[in-house]
Image (tube, rainbow, N blue to C red; front, side, top):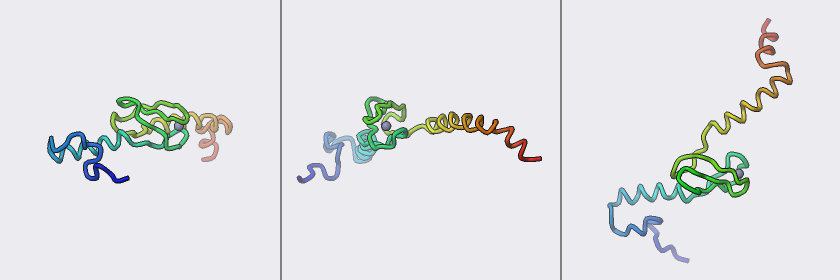
Length: 105
Ligand SMILES: [Zn+2]
């Protein structure tokens, strides 16, 4: 099937109006809004926009807060996982600080 809007894509509804720069910027933003992103939790490409700044993974059904028109997973998602993983491993070895102190002298 031939593509109807080769150049303008999603901004086809704008027609010849508003100027090329605005149409291009709109196209850029809309592309990010429509796109499917990889999930930071289950790493499948299934995160889609459900509302302004709301993104949901259709596989694990987790909802994320991110940018209004683009999904950029906050680094805190990963930081929380690391922090929750550290104390359990540290307590298994008797605490992170104690290990360091015992190893230095
Ligand atoms: Zn997921």
